[in-house]
Amino acid sequence: MTIRVIQPLQAPHYDLLLSADPNKQLVDDYIKRGLCFELIFNNTVAGILVLLPTRPETLEIVNIAVSESYQGQGLGEKLIQFALAYATNHSYKTVEIGTGSTSLGQLYLYQKCGFRMTSIDRDFFLRHYQDEIVENKLVLKDMVRLSIDI
Ligand code: ACO
Ligand code: ACO
Image (cartoon, rainbow, N blue to C red; front, top):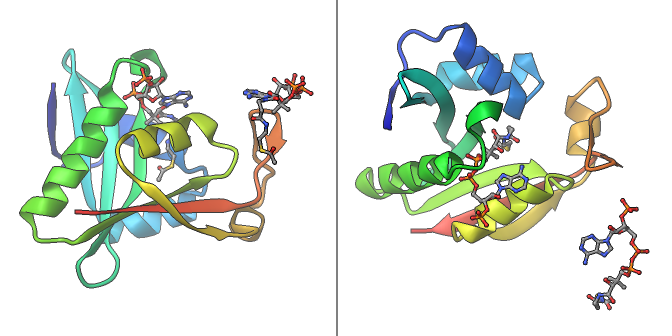
């Protein structure tokens, strides 16, 4: 397994980016400003990670995804550990992540990795996403913001 900077971004990367975030406009905006990494496993692109410096000393994981066929094998956790190590090595003090309130598995994963909830951005997904998102039989409306101090 290797995690490395992507260049250039190709179709498999896009599929992964959109699996984590269906808003193409938002994705296109942050991949230009952020640092994009790919996770290579079995010689294929199995995961993606986009890190964006937001405020001084703060780095946000704006996109994280693992291909469906590789999910549940610890690769998502490896990507988060990579992000935390990157932040430490580049003198960031805080790492943030935002996810849907209906993303129950993701909320479990981020808290397992040490993230704690900081705030709720109510109606974020109603404001920024045209199509309704249904997850775990719930309509997604609110974003949960989590962070970890390193
Ligand atoms: N549902 C239930 N449990 C989950 C989920 C999930 N969606 N994701 C992770 N977990 C649990 C695993 O069961 C595992 O539990 P364990 O430690 O008790 O065995 C633990 O979290 C670690 O899981 P990994 O195998 O490391 O995670 P995985 O490689 O499957 O990747 C990821 C997790 C990236 C969330 C993957 O499910 C995915 O790509 N989902 C679709 C895209 C997505 O939702 N991305 C996040 C959006 S938010 C954002 O991008 C900022
Ligand atoms: N984990 C996962 N799913 C759950 C849980 C749970 N703990 N509780 C409910 N659900 C889901 C069910 O799967 C069901 O889903 P579905 O509609 O897709 O089929 C739905 O929620 C409704 O479930 P019910 O069968 O009506 O709930 P149940 O009779 O099991 O009661 C309760 C839920 C009261 C939370 C019960 O699990 C319980 O007593 N837990 C221990 C005490 C507890 O945690 N109480 C709440 C603490 S907070 C408070 O008291 C204010």
